[in-house]
Amino acid sequence: MNKLILVGNGFDLAHGLPTSYTHFLNNFWETLHLNIKEDSIKEIIEYDESYFGLFNYTNKPVLSFDSLIHNLSLYCNHNRFQFNQKAIHASHNLKTIFKIKNEFFRKINQKNSLLNWVDIENEYYSELKKIAKLQFSHLSETENNKTKKERVVKLNQEFEQIKNVFEEYLSKEISDKFDFNNIENPKEFIKISELLKPIIISKGPYSSNKISNLSKEFSLQDDENEIKNYEYKIQSKEAFKPIIFDSLILSFNYTPTVFSYNYYINRDFGKDICSYNYIHGELKSSENKMNFGFGDEIDNSYKEIENIGDNEYLKNFKSFQYSNTQNYDNLLRYIDSEKYQVYILGHSCGLSDRLLLNTIFEHENCRSIKVFFHESHSKDNYTDIIQNISRHFSNKKSMRRKIVSKQLSSPLPQSVRFKKKSV
Image (cartoon, rainbow, N blue to C red; front, top):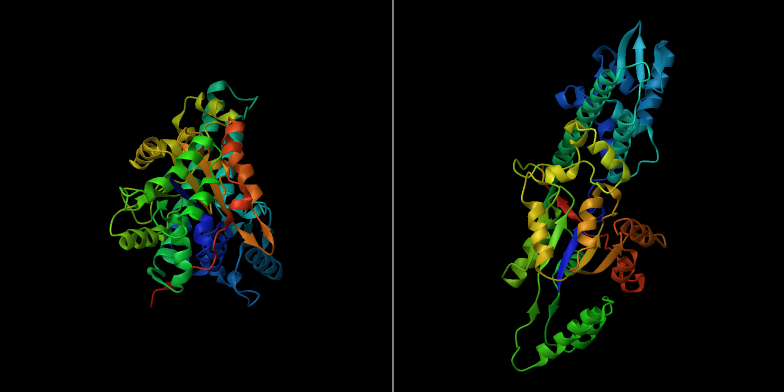
């Protein structure tokens, strides 16, 4: 029985890495006065350098979007400048002082309900659907399609600008600042390593208990019998060596976090028993670029968008970007090769990865899905995750058989930390 480990942004957060949507946005506004002249920033923000005081008017540093708006509002009010808070547009004598040119970026900053990266991808899809359904009664069909096309092009350009700034953020604040080969607390590191290791059956005083506990995570009798049969094999005189299966870490992140674990596990065993697949790309990779977009082709509106017949509408759908590398094909080969159990570590299983997750979860070789949930102050997100998982199943009976109960699951460890690089 192989193991397929889905690693999402919650995995990076469990390592103390500031990779969340909120981390990124707060850093954008906190460092804006330092980065305002960079080309990637100037694509998003229009700013007149003559009015630099707007950044420090209250003598308090700008730490977030809300604090920027507070500063900007007070600054304009004191100097009797015009300020449209809804449009985030400050001006003086019809001259723009400050403006967020990227409308999509402005909207996601103003929406307090957006908490995770999957929410941003969902918001992009929501905007795309709105454009696809637009009808201007005063325009001809040709003019109507042209106007909609212009809006889609603009949305895609703005989405690309955000992706570029996000990639720069991950490079500067994560990849360049942390030493992923230098662990502050090795004992905690080993705890997560044990989760990523493949299933290993070996002789020992606790082998029977280990096999018995493992078998409880599979509801199909054939799977349970197969696992219990491992004990007979390992205790027989013919089988002195442990039975070692394979594990694949499927990373939905872009950071180097899983490299450390993959190297450690394989070094410890002296051979490659664990591999990784950066399904959505890697930082600073020219061959495996970031795949950031939407991936729900099962959604009812997708067919309508596809039938428009304009490829601009499909530009940021993940499935078309998968073809740029062999990552997706390699995943299919893995899940086709052998029965497997899915481990979920820090992945919300939201709709923006629906096509891919549906392929994994409903595959006949997928025999069990075990969730390692986030727990904080006696609350956890186990139920939220399995509810999200259910949306990727058309066969709900199969879903209920595959999901491992909470009693057999456990929280994802949150204490592993990488040391920062010396300056």
